[in-house]
Amino acid sequence: MAYDDGGGTGALRSPSQPQSLKDVKVVGKVVMTGRQYKCNYVPLVKLASLLTKLKEGEGILVAIETARFSIESVAALAKAYGAKIEVLSSEEGLVTLLIKKD
Image (cartoon, rainbow, N blue to C red; front, side):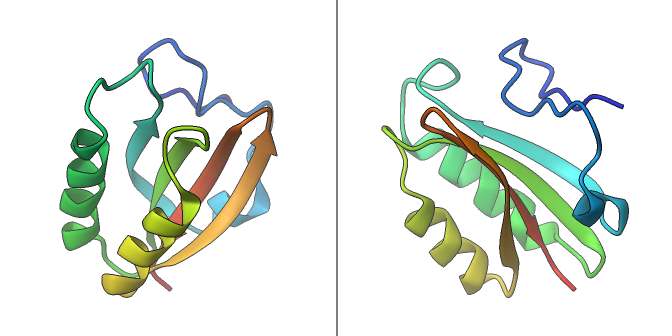
């Protein structure tokens, strides 16, 4: 099953489902790339909104363009809401994370 953010960017596509996704119900997706948003604050606000509603056993997929956004800022935001991050993939300046609550 392929995952897609719906925007056609392919940022959240995966040819096979990672093991960590089988144990988590994905309730949201955020694409943090220059192509998706002109303002850096929009995806962070969207992520914070999703994190406020995140429950145990649920997760959020996040694709980060590392030239524009820092993984550290996303990790700090996740930690503030009691969530953990897991790197699912990393290639050519694009990192895909799973933010989840256990």
